[in-house]
Length: 259
Ligand code: BGC
Image (cartoon, rainbow, N blue to C red; front, side):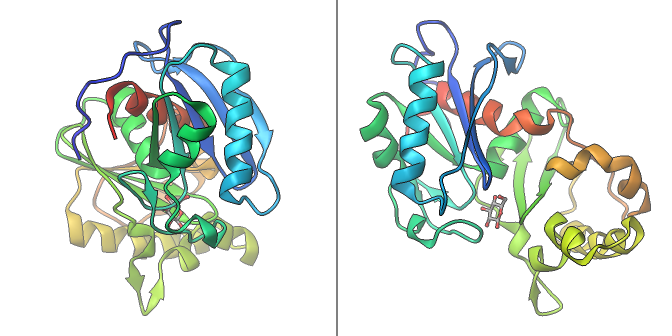
């Protein structure tokens, strides 16, 4: 997907990024020169059920409070997003499927809106400012959380909606076997989890021959405990932007994209 430079940033000079997650919806203006927040992040609990209209209401509050003016807003969604329409909902309310999220948010915000898959936003941010900055070739970012999100970035260009968390391994959806939520639920040791992850990353390695894996999601801060245990050949490093990556990537796309 090409993201041609088109929109100007907010009058204050900073596009606004919003990360829609299972427990919280977070937003901040982003300084594109540094990839850092230009002001403090605001967080509002995700409304129970996380239905599209309710999430749009929270997004409108975050923007009204944190982004005066009419600059562009980028919003992540934990599902496939094709030309603004959400096409999957593995871990969110199924009514997102078929929702034109760009239309929904634009009605609420009345300003330019870009909607992007959460892992894609994080992958782009890591490639621009974080663990995969200046990395040649193919970077595969994986977010290990409730599910597994993936982003493919080749020579700095995002190939969206890869959804490799749903690869079928031994007849089952990979994220139901190896996500961080599975480790927590089954109370797996780091070693036990590393075995499942090795199988997952080895499959990605065989299919894609990447130059680098970047591991995001909250658990990446414990990378030292499980990454050295993985039996794979490709270099694998923790994400460096941590929980800012989704917001930063969404803001980058908002500043650079048209729908
Ligand atoms: C969804 C992806 C999402 C990932 C992380 C998966 O279940 O299918 O679209 O990126 O979870 O939230």
